[in-house]
Length: 104
Image (tube, rainbow, N blue to C red; front, side, top):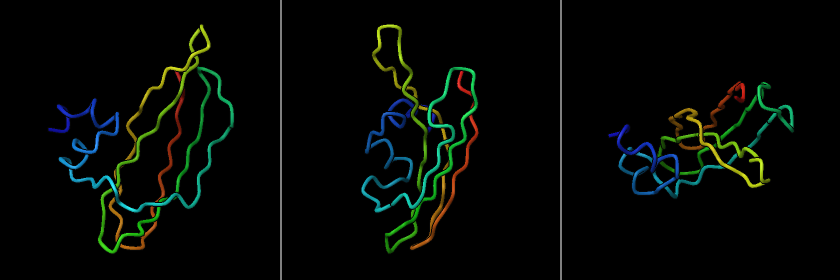
């Protein structure tokens, strides 16, 4: 099922996410985020770190993906979504996602 729904999941479709066990309106907050460096050239490495906290009274599964907007030759943006991580957060719990990515 995950494979069939992958395009809709990348688009953030609430129905597809709910079929996989993710609740669209879960009160998750970003406590801290770090992206280093601020501007990245193609072929460079970027480090992304995000702390997420579950404000819900129930434990929740959280899907974290990364979206990179590439600048096309005409100046417009082309977004690309990369798979990130899945976190299981208890009520009030905080989780950290760290990724190092080389943009190609």
